[in-house]
Length: 421
Image (cartoon, rainbow, N blue to C red):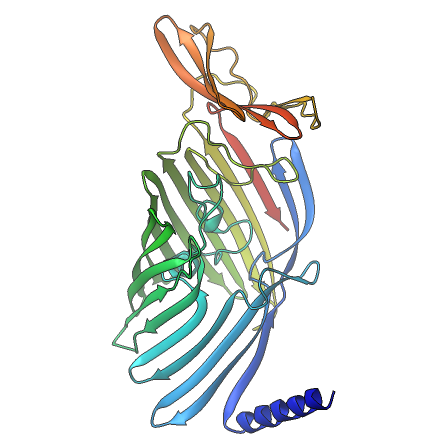
């Protein structure tokens, strides 16, 4: 006990001495919203968080070392304001130490990757809430379906360098140590130019997803301010082996007094995904915004109303439509059959897309099925004479809890509608 008390006293004395020469800031954001989500015939009411800004708590400090040098630190952690719980590691949003001067900044620790900055800087919704551009973005097709590798937003163990002010030019380079962890060894860079109403930037990065597979990520984005609002645009690509994901979005913001009106329109397209790869379901039986193969687009509209410099009200609406190799005359896009009954010896059937019906001139179905020791999988084809069209994927999982059969048509559109009043 005596040793503990002495250590605490020494730490307190050190902190007090440091505060006499430096500035330390406690900061945070609390963002809570009411949200309604509809997906097919599944809907949900929520008290959600991070609808306009990411809820967080952090500390940052700077000490003047003299001779134009400064040392700084920044530790910041996320929290779910609707439940009061912390997420992930304690300071997972940012945990860095820096040395700054006329040469720029050397920054070490966990931070945003260079290739993520353009997403959040040029998105009118700041990659937050139901209107975020990342609803269609930060998942890599063909890995764990709907999943990602660890450096799409942040990376651990970064050594980074930021350019000093150079007549409007800005930029950074980064290298992170993988430390024998797949998906964390990252190399990236970003270069931009901002002057007057213009701001444009490009970024590139590569990640060692596995020892034999790299993920390449690049994007370019820009904005232009006019007397009637600010326009922004983004285009980027993520490639993992033969798998490719392309994203673009257009954005607009218009300040009117205390109001700021926002709008964006964007699309994602994925190619090279192996047959039968499906998006995962969450506990509500909804696959979210995952796009296994094909394309999806999102329309988002919103506003913020500033009550003060620190407090705002906001509302956001978004609609996401997903399309996979459309065929004509598909009927009843909201039809859903769910007869899944998990358990030993039982068969579960889930049709997550509606079957094709009333397609003039087409007749007959053919199923191509294969099997290994733990699963069967195949494709379903629609026949007309000697012509066949691939309309779905089937997989049967022989797990320890029983046998599950899933069939997913890839022929019609689906939609997700989110609303934050």
